Length: 274
Ligand SMILES: Nc1ncnc2c1ncn2[C@@H]1O[C@H](COP(=O)(O)OP(=O)(O)OP(=O)(O)O)[C@@H](O)[C@H]1O
Image 1 (cartoon, rainbow, N blue to C red):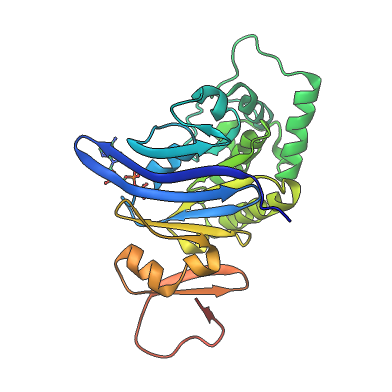
Image 2: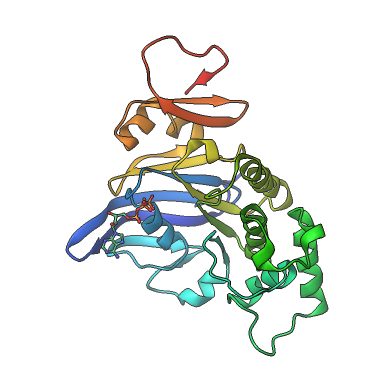
């Protein structure tokens, strides 16, 4: 079996701003069907890396290839249309319905553009995605009345309607209570079945917020890669402690990850220490 298509490739990416080097040579390759976690402490460089993945920023040196196009050599707007970006800080203020918000994924706008009308097929596609994300009962509810968790799922539907090959999830669990977080993670897990070719990158500070289906991790600290690769090899007590500059014990239980300060004493026998 030949390896899956490369969706994203960062090679020796350096990023400087105002005489400060923010990223010091980041490399990473993401293939179709892979689900990456981008992890690291505050100020590590996660948002900066995500900016390259979303074709929003150019590197100072090094190369970034997104969906076959090299940043700096291709039209960014066209590339961005093939990338689904889920940002929980979506700046919508007007009272659009869930159905209309999902449709704005096709126009790439926050509000519905004046005089824009979806085709019957587009409208049916929005309905289908709303169902996939478990929001059918809320399809006509207005955005301001939705909970954070419902908005998160609606934004995933919005990101998927453009049939992206790459999905970026920027701290999707921020502000969610434990039930809403678990529901969102379950939804993300579901996508591996409904969209098997889709590659995704999920940014978080917390190992507890990783969906079970996460296949790879890129751990960054101080603008450099600590580890990158298959999740079982990349997320270990040693690598996470190094990235966060603190002794942290990493464990995996029933497919889910956890981290806590390392303490003297015995291990919990129920946990698989990574
Ligand atoms: N345009 C810029 N000009 C100057 N410094 C910047 C710029 N963008 C980012 N930085 C700095 O680069 C570093 C990495 O920032 P980045 O936002 O990528 O980190 P992060 O890992 O996403 O952090 P957090 O988890 O706190 O969101 C920080 O020290 C930040 O202050």
